[in-house]
Every structure is written in C-alpha cells, then in structure tokens.
Amino acid sequence: MPTWDYGPDGEYFVTICTQKRVPYFGEIRNGIMGLNELGNSAAIYWQEIPLHFPFVELGAWVMMPNHVHGVIIIDKSSVEVQNSAPLRNSDFQNNKFGPQSKNLASIIRGFKIGVTKYAKSHNIDFKWQSGYYDHIIFGEKESIAIYEYIKNNPSKWENDHNNQINRI
Image (tube, rainbow, N blue to C red; front, side, top):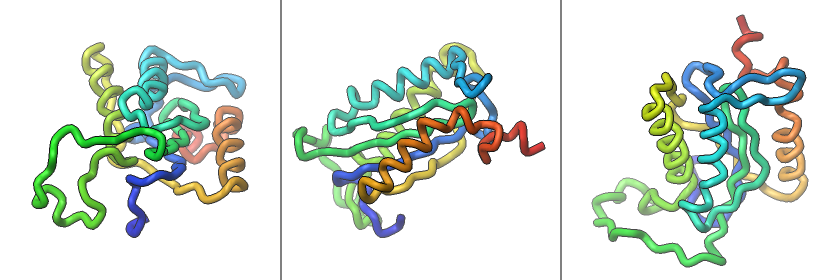
C-alpha cells in the first residue's frame, strides 16, 4: 500500500515466490509438504527471523514447493530498536517514511539473502522472484481467515494459483 509505513507495529501476511515459480523447496504429496535440503534450510532461516529482528514475532507460516506464506508481526513497543549507523538525510530524502531498515522490506530482504547465500554455498541453482506480496492484516476476523488459509495451503495445492504444474 503506497501510503502505508511498513516500519511501525503491525501484522502482515506475506507471500514470497521463487523465480518463475520453480519448486525449489520440495513437493507436496497427499496434501503434505515434503521439504528438500533447500526447503529445510529456508524453513530454518524463516524461523530465525526474530533472532535478527528482535522486534518481530512470527505468526502462522508454511513452506510450499515454490513459495513461502507467513505472518510477520512487528512489535517494537517491547524491544528497544536502534539503528546500527546513523544515516544522512540524503540517504532517504526521497522516501517519506525515512530510512528503510527495521521494516517489513528489510525483514524480507534479510530472509531472501540468507536463503540465496545458503543455495550458492551448496551449489544449488536457485533464484527468488523479485519483490514479494504483502497484505496488512486488520482485525481478528481477517487474522483468523489468513491463519486458516496458511494452515490449509498444502492440502489445496492441486488448485493453488502458484502451482505451475497444473497451469500447463
């Protein structure tokens, strides 16, 4: 959302896809996601997000063959957040929300970098799609629906729009 500052507290549903929706992370059989080596590593990197961003809690999430769905909860009220280095005004003068660190984009960027570095260091051919999809979660009713969607995603893989195998 162009008018939304993704730095303050909030709950966000994100989807991060692999390039061309290639199933790099494993496969689904009988409605159950089976992770391969890269999928297991990506799952570990996802779970470690709060170690790198102490103001983040992870909600429901699932690794799928070619994408990750997850809820990221930013809560800076209980954690002191400091920038590691001061930025000059010119570094973010064109961005009305200020420096782009310690926000949703920096969290996703860090996750994607970690998985990419793992793949490269293990000679795994892998690429992310640029960007990601996000949805700001407003209210408990919406949150419950998204958590259900995430939980049931593997069992609905046959009809998932991200399942490129069924689109041929």
